[in-house]
Image 1 (spheres, rainbow, N blue to C red):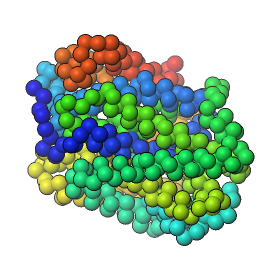
Image 2 (cartoon, rainbow, N blue to C red):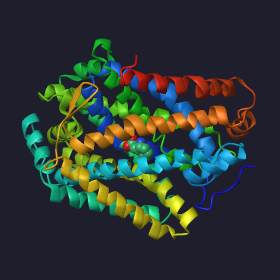
Image 3 (spheres, rainbow, N blue to C red):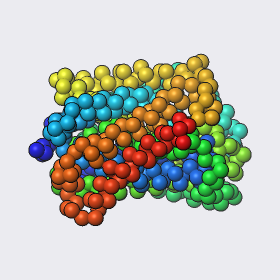
Length: 457
Ligand code: PHE
């Protein structure tokens, strides 16, 4: 039978859940990653596939993940095991939870380093470094940061400490209020940036790049990257949303919440793209510039617009916050498991998890300088060494695989009664639609994209 509360606490309202889950979803994935992978993968067609994946795969799987989490009310590992037994299935389903914990560690290790870049840029913005920046000087400025491992380590450390502090106090305190204020502010600032892009003289070129599909430019690698990003940006496939679902009051509507979260997440990403690409074209930068793209373009905007000092500082502060609210959700499943199964106090569990993640982060830091190497993924050269490897392994493979397993579990291994109960949508069309999506469409789509990427199709 469904448990009514979680030992780790509960959201007070549905809104609190939506805000926290949006805080998890909206992060570096939207503002840093989406623009640069859209740039690397040719724009329009990639963006279209990404949006398709969010709606056809992401939303149904998000609903599955929330319903599973709310029914289990524990860390994803224990939730999966409990529900598997409850449904008369094998306990190996808990492996989905374990895979998620590992993916969470791998992601936070580089996520924290990139968040460190955003902290560095906050101080640069405040110090007036962006004044009259051009494409060339912006590139020099960025490379100077990447080539300085000690500075990167310092910011990475600060970000990890910030994350551990919040987790050790329990994710509820503060998260709701923070997201409630910061998310709308981030929205406004993105609009200001789009406003600047409008004056760049190349606005329509940016829009065309983002929204006019050229299917000739769509490689198999681009398709799997787009799908992987749908999981990454919605925080799906590793248990973050399952964890947050476990704190959701029983009466809240899962379908409506999922739609709202996915919509807000997508809007932030598209706005970021609309702000960035016009600046790329107006300043002689390359859409394929890679992970530095947002750090090369937006400082130019801030350096040349009225009020740029204020807007620039505020923007990077908000980016750090957005990353922070995502980072928390990346390691919450591991911390919750330590508390549940090892009887470790939350504070201590948070510190242990944080130390492991911090150590792993050093690999990413070094992969931008001394340990850099180049490799091929689906026919494209990747120059980011271990960072690129980690990113591809987690976003393109581990998250979609985790999501596939959750879809199969909710669609085929949980009884119709259990899922219908939890979704509380009655017998109606929406429930039947979700069930078709979760049983057939989402799993098939994931498998086809995998086959396509390894050249089977
Ligand atoms: N969704 C977050 C972002 O877009 C990253 C994330 C992935 C968070 C997986 C939690 C789990 O930045």
